[in-house]
Every structure is written in C-alpha cells, then in structure tokens.
Image (tube, rainbow, N blue to C red; front, side, top):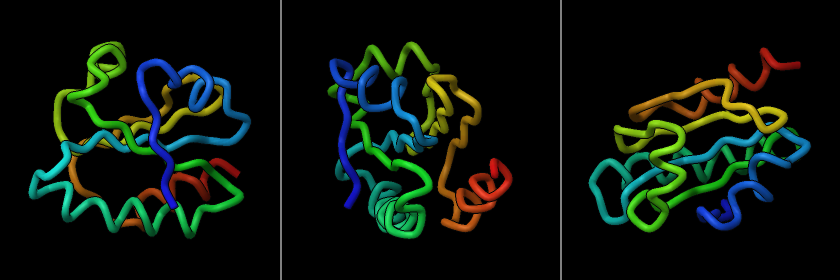
Length: 105
C-alpha cells in the first residue's frame, strides 16, 4: 500500500528517509491519475524493502510542488538521502522506475 505525505510531513517522510523515495504527484480524479495510480501501486509492492513509494496531492500541498518545480501531472520525483535525483514527468511503466532503482545498487 502506498503511503501519503503532505507539506507538513515531507521532510520527515521523504527528506530524512534512509531508503530511496519515489513521490508521485497526481491530481485526484484526473484521467491520468486513473492510469498512473495502478502503476504506482505496483511499484510500491515490487520495490518493498528497497524503496519507499509515496503519493502527494498537489492541490492540497502547494509548497512542496513549488519547491521542487512540479508543473506536469502526474510527475514522480526520486529522492536519495534527502536530495532530488530524478524528475519523471508523465505516465511511465513500472519497469522504468524499477530500472532506475536497480541502477542505484
């Protein structure tokens, strides 16, 4: 199951995490979210123990959206040791995220 984070919890949930963290920014109810949602859910399941996968509602959390320049929905950001290392706008297959994760090890 994918956890959700907020502007208030972002530092604790993402920036201080020991594992790599994928953060999915998707608008609730949007057509693209209905497509990307299952992809992110699968990533969370397959990457369990290797990376955290979180979702963030961009409308409810504008500070984080602005801070990291998220302009397109959906967008997935990858953080390692509190640093943004990849920005992946658009819908991508689960394998793309897993390949990135594999290259980290």
